Image (cartoon, rainbow, N blue to C red; front, top):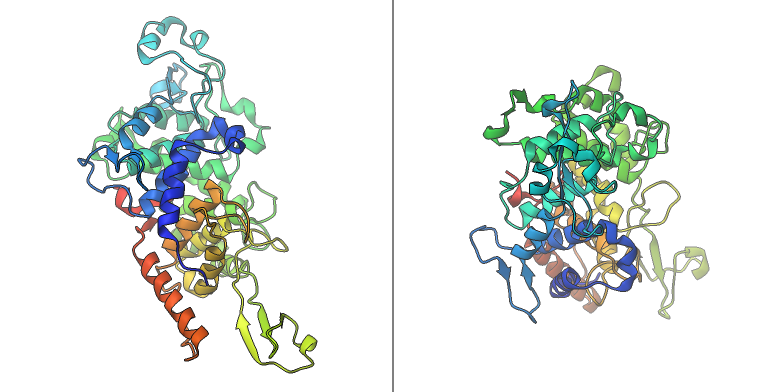
Length: 454
């Protein structure tokens, strides 16, 4: 097992906030998500202050941690899209286009003041690609909260009414917000690829963040928070994505997948209906099927047979039946059957088991060991062992590691021998246990530190 390299990870995420390799240029339209991965990871590592009244700049230039919270907050607010008033009946407050886009790739666009001066023809004065995206709105809100912003500058009503207009009759959500007031989501019934469980989760998370524990918004424009989205149809759409194996596919009829399963279960959790759904008579046994599917996504624990000459194999027969020692190998998670391990599924599937209160059923230490083996000497985590680090897999590896200290996931641990190797392994495990124990607690369903949720 490798030690947890906290300082290297801090340097990696802090540096990535300032500059990235050219390979990331293709992700420029989603730059906000890259900032999200860095900020959330630094928050998990305990590098961001809890007190929002502290200095806006964390650290000084040239140090391991340098985060200008004020600049990042202003940049995010600059990505907000100007909502367009909609007069059609059936929409709360008549707004479309409220939310955030992924980056400032369009350059300077119409400001709120400009919008006020063009109320007679708002749709024609907007750039056709200046539209908000559900996923980008989700990461914007999470990042702002992690940076200590109170969201007081957010037009909550515009975003919530936009979400209402993006929900289709079958309960799913269209990912992109329109820029025209003449747009009708019913016209996009064929756009299935933009209406899957990823965007369901993002929409529900946005709704939850903007409505939970906020008395001022319990009744916005005489509309209760539950009226912004149709909870029943959203629930039914999630259940329609259930595969024969018990997992959830991205859309109805698709193969069960670790990522979409998490999105669906986390959405039910945030909607407050997960326990009710699992107790329905017509779904009796589904929780057990889903739990079994998730647990079986952990690769089987291979046994490495070590011969007296120091050579090793995973097949006992290669040693003529003579075994000196057997060592358990790390076992990662796969997203679907017959696929290879991938560190991000440690969170997607481990998080699903966490929400089902069943994470103790997996081999937590074996999964920890696999994730730690994917650490890069430069900091961060790769997709698989030996891969270069990237921000997505680095964040979800960090998220899983902090989840692994909860719900008895890694409580069971065998006592080691007294030889030198066993003593060293015990010391490494102690360092890992202590380091992970210091990570900030995660709100699994929202994918951000629990100390930031209200």
